[in-house]
Image (cartoon, helix red, strand yellow):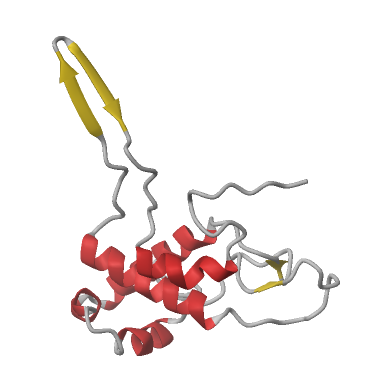
Length: 160
């Protein structure tokens, strides 16, 4: 009987856009990756799995190569006939964005929430959100923008 595989084990293409080995190679080139290099392998893997899950729920251009694939990437343009091409690579920008987001998660501990403003006037209190918060850091958003159906969280998609 074999030991069960830990939930944090990276399986590129199944629960992560990038293998741990490839993520290490990207992180080694980053200046502010101290949280990544000081983290142990389980934490690094969990960060990559979480980053993939966050990116995977975005609305991407095109469609998955195979309708049965577990992740949104790899993708092909909508105009490609079904079944062609048989394989496609995940763009380097998506892989890098996944690693950058994982590093950010390890550094910050969580994604920021929307800022809340409060105003008191006598017994009345008003709360509002002054901006629409984008949960992704700007440097990650810039990497993935060319591949999104709508380029930012503030742009609506209109389907006719």
